[in-house]
Amino acid sequence: MPSSNDVRKYTYTDYLLFPDDERWEIIDGVPYMQSAPSWQHQSISRELLRQFANFLLGKPCEVFAAPFDLGLSEAGKKDKDITDVYQPDLVVICDKNQLKGTGYFGVPDLVIEILSPSTAKKDRLLKFNMYEKFGVKEYWIVEPDVKLVSVFILQGNKRYGRPELYTELNDVKVSIFPDLIIKLNTVFEF
Image (tube, rainbow, N blue to C red; front, side):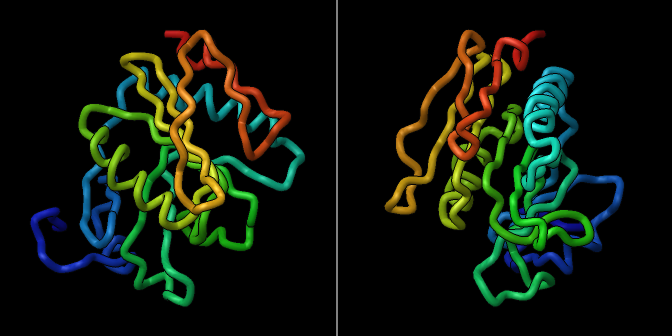
């Protein structure tokens, strides 16, 4: 059984041996067990998925919802040796060549994480740093309890700039799809 107290670095090969009835992530070789999401979390995820999927219908990009493995690694590293395997709430990919088995092994164009008390620190710090490091173009952090969305856009210097902040009263223009506007009043309609 994996433990975040272990000193060894876990890989995707180890990850595939974790119990099927549990959800795990590996961040820089450290395993983290995922908790069951709240109904508010699920409602937000469903509505964001609906809006993105409707827009992407018939287009080359696709949106996927958790459970969905996202493997990030430096160029040349074999999938089995990857030490970063995430379960983002939503992920948009435009290069379908990297779809394999249980998910995607490459850098997605957009990632959305919906915070819960048990994941907030990890999503705001650990995943933020890794998504920035690997070059995810757009990263959203959604906070259900305060109905707030922070949108981080990768800048020319390969760093996320200051976030654009949105409430349930706003619409979000998605930077990677200029024609897509996400209506937050329906996302936070609970």
